[in-house]
Length: 77
Image (cartoon, rainbow, N blue to C red; front, side, top):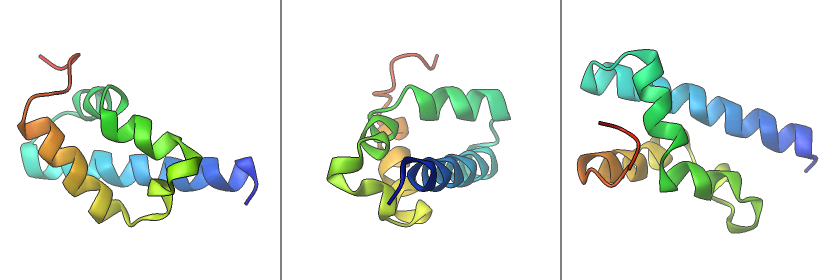
């Protein structure tokens, strides 16, 4: 898989995670993106070696949601 293909998949995941966060938690888009980009989940999605980026956005969202609900995302206050 090329880097462009991987980037496309990751960007699609980010779009879906943003949508899920804004719908479930009534967050603004900037707040949702802040949560995503400052999460451990996002760091793992960006690492091609672990293959998380090939999982469904819904599966990845459950990981992100758990992280958000535990308030372990440092930059969101």
